[in-house]
Length: 333
Image 1 (cartoon, rainbow, N blue to C red):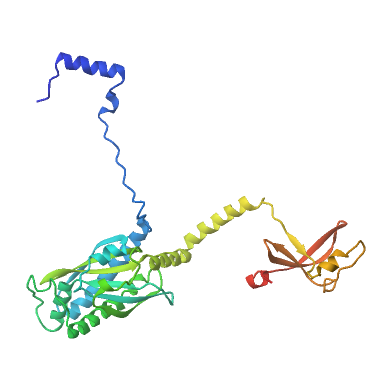
Image 2 (cartoon, rainbow, N blue to C red):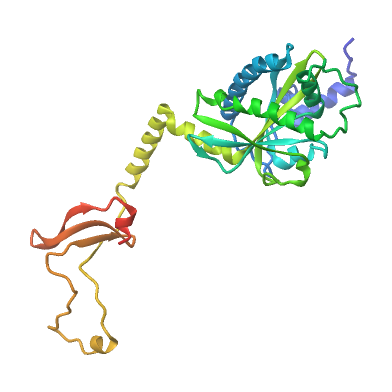
C-alpha cells in the first residue's frame, strides 16, 4: 500500500517546490554513471585491437583442439576465456615457484622482434596432459598438483608439448600478417627471472582447456611493444587505412602550403685569417675556391635540399634548380 502523506507533509513539500529547494521534474531521474578512468594505467589498445586478438585466438583454439585430441587420445575442448590488458607484474605475481614458463621468439614479416611471447600451462593441467601422453587416464588427486615440481623427465615431455602448441600459433595470424613463433626455452622458476619489464603493458590471453578428467588454464602473455609493432604493420598493409592516411596528409599539407620558409643559396665557403679580414677594403676579391659554373646549393634549415646554377631572372639574381637532393646523405653534404 502506498504511503499516505499528512497535511503538514503536503504543505512542506509544496513550500519546498515553490522555493526551488526541490525540483519535481528531476526527482525521478537516476544519476548518470560514468566509467572511471585509471590515469596511472592508461589503456594502450582499443576495443578493435582486443576484438582482433579474440578472432586470432578463436582460430588458434580450433587449431590446437584437433592436435590435442590426437596427441592425448581423448576428446578435449579449448575456448578463449578472457583477453585482458594489464601490467606484467600482475601476471608475474600470480605465478608460484613450482610453475614453469615457456618463451617463444616472434618473427614479424621475417624480422625477429625483441620481446618474446610467454606461454603458461597450469601445473595441474600439465600433469593431466603428460599422464595422458604416457598412457594414463589423466586422473589426479586434488592436492597432488598444488605445489608439485616437475622432474627432469617431465620437463623434457613438457617442452615437447609446448613446442607443438607454439608451432601453430603463427598460423592463426595469417589472415592479418605473416608471423612465426618459435620455441626458445623454458624457465623453471619464472619468479626469479625478469623476462619483461615489470611495469610494461602486456595482453594476457587466458584459454580454458577441458579434459574428461578435469580442466585447466593455458595463458599466452603478449608484450605490448610486440603488439604495437604488429598493429602498425597491419595498418600499413590495410588499403583502407592507407587512403585515410593520404587524405589526412593532404589536409595537413594544405594548411602548411602558405607558410613562409627561409631558403639560403650558398655560393661557396672559404677561410680567412683575422689579419686578412682586418685589411679588407672596397674592391678586394675573395677567392671561394670554385669555378663560376660550379653548382650552388639551396639550404633549408641548415640542410642542402636543392642544387642549381647562378643566373638572372627579370634583371634579378636567381638560382635555377637542376637537382633535388632526395637522399639524407645528399642533404647533409
